[in-house]
Image 1 (cartoon, rainbow, N blue to C red):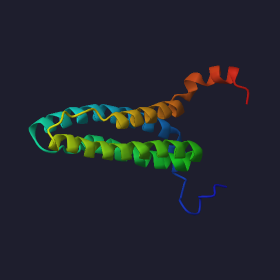
Image 2 (cartoon, helix red, strand yellow):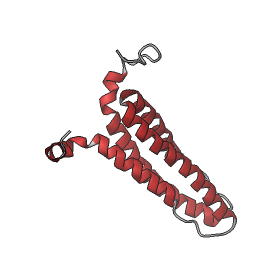
Image 3 (cartoon, rainbow, N blue to C red):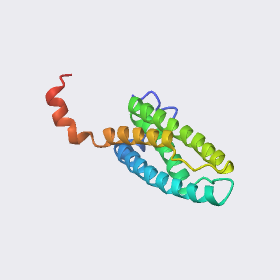
Image 4 (cartoon, one colour):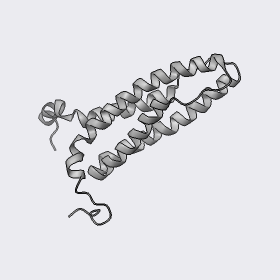
Amino acid sequence: MDPLQFLVPLGWLSAVGPVLPYAILTMAVANLATRHIAHRRHVEQGTDGDSVEPYTPHAFTNIGLVLLSFLFVLDAPVSGVIVSVLVITMLIADLFELEARNVEARNDMPIEAPKSSIAASLLVLVFASYYALWFLVAGLWNQFVIA
């Protein structure tokens, strides 16, 4: 018996749960791609004006990662919480980096790359690939690690 079965109807999650790590990995790769495109747009906006605007596809991948990681919490609580904390950290870093880009644009400074956001999103990508691609290293891992 699942302790959350009376709070949240989890019947549909048994069908969706196994593909959540792959969806999170796909969204993490898309997030890195949109982060690169967003940075190029921010550099263009910073040279032309006094502010930079959030890039809509990048915001979509951020929100998608948050929602998918929260669904992953329902399917695999420990792994989901780890991924959720990393995704929320990445989202907060994105917000601070966007404000930093606005300050750089207002003060006519060169627009730098969002280093902390890149590091946080790479960490999300590492953990997402760990959960999604575990089958690639499971045999080797089980040979050397005795549980």
